[in-house]
Amino acid sequence: MNKFDIKFISPPFFSSEYQDKVCLGKIKINDFEESFFSPLSFWTKEKYQEHWRRSIQRMMLNQVANSCLITSMYNPQEANFIVWWLFYRDAKNVHIQNQVLFLQDLVEPFNIQKMYDYIPKRKQYNDEGESISEWKTNILSLESFLNT
Image 1 (spheres, rainbow, N blue to C red):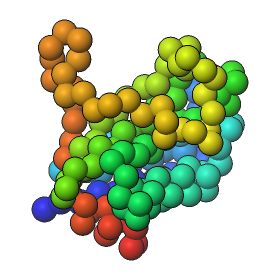
Image 2: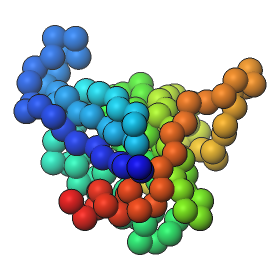
Image 3: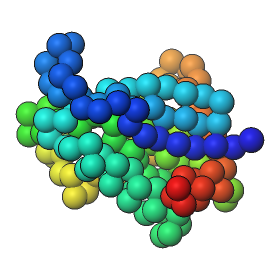
């Protein structure tokens, strides 16, 4: 059965590892589950949640081919990277990859208003020819997520 969910599973707390206030989150794609920490120094818990819903709606309502869910966002003027999940849509399915966007690799400074412009074309293999980790779910699972 296809299923998609992303949510926070803890209240905000201070992490000595991150030296920041964070929330523990979890993403679920069918049988795959992964936990993550979202820093709260730049975006609030609510801002992440709003961004996730808006990004999925953007893909579903506008039927665009890709979108992204950021799970680790710092001030882009000071950060080295952003952690995000990239969504690539085809007719009935969405292919999802977890990636790190290294901001120094961009030709221009990262602009939050243009975040979708930084999504690279979908690659299934890295430069060494190895498969890139990717998960697939159907469009209906994203619609179900939006309806919860």
